[in-house]
Length: 76
Image 1 (cartoon, rainbow, N blue to C red):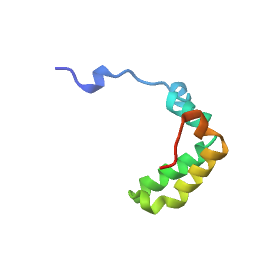
Image 2 (image 1 turned 180 degrees about the horizontal axis):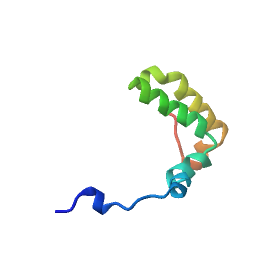
Image 3 (image 1 turned 45 degrees about the vertical axis):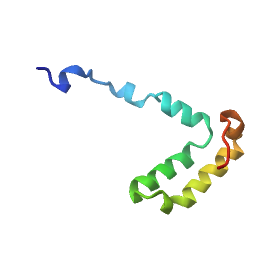
Image 4 (image 1 turned 90 degrees about the horizontal axis):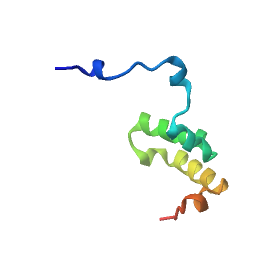
C-alpha cells in the first residue's frame, strides 16, 4: 500500500512563489487587497456577520472596478 507522500511530487520554492490560477483571477479583479482582508477577518472570527465592514469594502471595490458587468453580478 502506498502512502500519500509517495504520490505527491515536491514543489520547488520557485513554483510556490508563482501565482496560480486562483491568484491570477483574484488579482485581475483589482480588489485582491480587499479580498484578502475579508478572508483574514473570516479566518480569525469564523463569522461573516462580524466582517461586514470588510465585506462592504470588497463590494465597493468590486463595483468601482466594473466587475459587476464583467461577471454579471447582481445585488441580492
